[in-house]
Each structure stands twice: as C-alpha cells, then as structure tokens.
Length: 321
Image 1 (cartoon, rainbow, N blue to C red):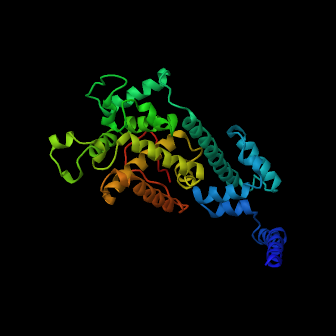
Image 2: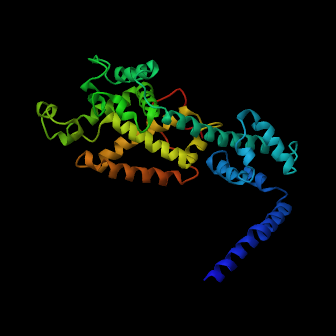
Image 3: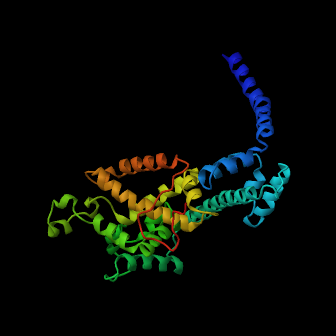
C-alpha cells in the first residue's frame, strides 16, 4: 500500500512539474496567449473571471497582498514578467486591474469586518450608546424608551433588559448591521418586526397573546435573529463563499456597504424561509438556520450568482451586472 502511494505521488509530481508546464507551453504557442490572457479574454467581468485569476495569482502572493494604491504598478510588473506587450493588449491590463482590485478589496473587507466583530459593545462609549438609542428610535418611533435598562428592549427582540449582553458573540458588527437595516430599509425592517411579534396562525386573541412569552411568536426575536444572521453573513465572508456574490456586484473593491446590503438581503430571505418552513416554535431555530445556510451556500457555488436583493435599501444598488 505504501509503495502504491509513493508511485502515485511521483506521477502527480511529474504531471505538475513537467507535463502540465509542457501543455501550457504548447497552448501558448498555439494560441499566442499566456494563461492570464486566456482567462481575461474568455471570461466576462465578475466572479468567474476573478476567481480564476485569484487562483492563478496565488503563485504570486505579493500581488494578492498589495496595497490598492499600488495595484496599477503590480499589473505592469505582472505583464512584464509574463512578457505581455501592454500596447497590443490594452484590455488585458484593464481586466487584470479590475480583478486584482476585487481580490485586494475582499481581503480588506474581511479585515474590517473582523475588527468590528472583535470590538465589544461598551456602555461607557457614547458612540456605542448613541447607535443603540438610534436603533430603538428607528424600530419604535412612537414609543419612548423608559430607561437605558428596560424590559422594553424585548419589544424589538433582545433577550433581556440590557442589549449589550446580546452583542457578545458578534460585537459591534451585530449592532452596525441591525442599525443599517433599520435606517436604510426601514419599511421592511418594521414589517419584519411586526410579523415576528404576531401569534402563529392567529391561534390566540391579542389580550391572551400579550400575556404570553414573545418567543412563541410567528418565529423569532427580531434583534437576536439579526445577530444570528450577522454571524451567518460573517461565516460566508471569511470562508470565501461570499466571493462569488461580491465579485459579481462590486465593479471594483467590495466594501462594508456591500456586506451590510448582503446582510439586509439575508434577513429578508430568512424571514420568508422561516415562514415557509412553518416551525412549531423557536426551539427549531437552529435547524431552520442550518437549512437556510446550506441553501445559500448552494446558490453561491454558481460563479455567475449574485444574491439579488428584494429590498429598497441603499444609495448603492447591489446588482450591477
């Protein structure tokens, strides 16, 4: 068995080092184009092209970690290394630059999102407190908050009288996403909050319902689900699964704004999915969330996929294909 493994490894090595390089040489001589040129000319702008270029450029790690301001010079260096004349291949430089900006932007976005996730909510920080108060005013515009510590927070889906304890897992990232959703797609956020507080199938009258636990509503506590969906969006981002979507919707560098809009989309789609699944109570949340996560992952395996939003959020449209 060990002898077989050694022989197999030898042939794999031989293929990678000799046969594959020889095949690339023949194809280049036959087409007159190197692999970078073939990728750029045979694939339209978006994830399909950028993912292939990203895989190819892993051989040039310095190119993938370059500062955005030095992308243009890096492209010149790559074309010189590959002996490509920029004057006879003007479109190649443009295509490479767009794809490299997307790759570098994605890396920077991961770092920015991670920084927000690691920053804990601090009730002594006035900026943090202002954001939290804004969230209340956006979701409960006609209801004054009786105090910073109040059971009223449960009305918008927090677990207790002090929301800061619910932000432990996702830090400030959860609050940023919830506030962005409430501010930029207010009508949808208010509708989802309203739906989440309704009795399932109208099985009870309003007076009876008000005496019962909010967790037994149509499905969930709004704010807690927002923090959970933030975690889902974060995992898609750091795993690289979200590259497909972001490379297809961000013409150049994906930004935090694109991530927040993706969160809004996921919130609305999860709401629909939860209603379709018709769970008996909140105890089924993890099952439904896992099933929803798998569905999104399947969609993102298509290199032409863009998670098309059904909400009005934003000054920046998500889909720009």
